[in-house]
Amino acid sequence: MSRNQIDLVDVVALILVPFMGAIALGTIGMQVNVFGNFAFSDVLWSASSVELTAAALLSIAGTVWIVATNEIDGSSYENYELVILAVTLGIVPAYVLIPAVRAFAGIDAISFILAMVQSGGAILVSYVE
Image (cartoon, rainbow, N blue to C red; front, side):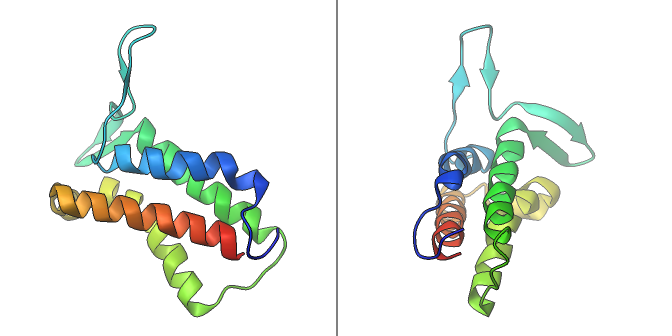
């Protein structure tokens, strides 16, 4: 929508992406005990080695929302912005779909770095475009 400022339509997604991305990557955990026990890291669907959680779905949906709202105005991305966009979009799906990435992100420092890269990438895409 507007260049070099945070778009108001992205604010909810900019809250969800870092928070849910960190939960999906196993960096932090959150459980709600209002109507029974519900954790955002509970597996909703599992097949083979793929484990889909609510946090992963919300993180991916938030990132797609940011990209979609910034594509409405037809802006063109620089090459470095496309790389940041691809990494930001790919972190959680790679964690969910690729067992080697999940094992590598099992290291606490790596999980933290991946969560920070995803958070920063989402904010940068929203801010720049």
